[in-house]
Image (tube, rainbow, N blue to C red; front, side, top):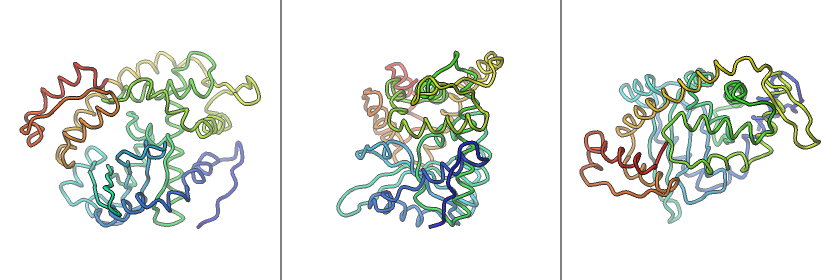
Amino acid sequence: MEPIVKDSPGEPGGMAQFLERRTKDTALMQDRAVQALVGALQERVGGEIFAVLIYGSYLRGVRDTLLDFYVVVEDYRSALGPIAGAAAFLMPPNVYYLSLVEEGRELRAKYAVVSRSQLQRQAGAVHPYFWARLAQPCQVVYVKDAAARRRLSLVLAACVRTFIKRVAPALQGWVGAESFFDTGFARTYRAELRAESPAKVQSIFRHDVDYYSNLLKLAADEGLLQRRERDEDQPIYAPTNFTGSTRNACYWGGTIGLGKLLSVLRLVKAAATFNDPIDYLLWKIERHSGVTVEASARQRRYPLIFAWPLAWRLYRLGAFR
């Protein structure tokens, strides 16, 4: 295991060093479910894998769920083939479903394949699809080598900085860490078609208060935010200036509209790469929103042709926003 340079407030690269340490969970390296799925991913994805990350509800202690992975590859064509690789290049990522039986237990995962170069670009993209997810806690469960781990930590740090830069101008004055991230997640979740309730979104910060609090402290050390000490344990933050609120409101208005369209396009693409996409989507919607509907056999077999009335019905029932 490569040595980690001790982080130091205000030191250039401090954010990346913090994330490099935080993405090393030795317990996950002993988790049989995680390791079995990582092994299967390495067999399934062709070409050279740069890194595999796990994120989402499994890291928050939920075990009766699909595990969410990012598989970062060096080259789409060698990893996915020419057609699927072209689709991933045009609209990253390609999302796939994986299931296997390990010691009599069925394991299920959803994994998104993205190239290293595109992930680097998406860390500063207009739409938050990538950087909003990767600003949240994730763990590296496979990495090619020590140099790759350091490069990946720099990308994760870029995602965090983009999140903070895009959210800070939306603040109404000085706020604590919880209000900052509640504001940010409310906007990034609205920029997609999501089934999670507002209460679910607000709970994200509380699952790892120390992680998010440290991100803001490091961002303030880098000059991305103003910081005041409200009391010893609860500093408050504000944007470095309050002159960009109108521009920021326009940004989020456009991003939310664009995001809904991109979500529909990604769902259409996922119908071609995901096994039983309708059953998966209905399961996820029921899990997060409580809305239950049944799909017909025809809708399951030909989702791109016959599932649109189902989507409209779910929307009318408030299944996603």
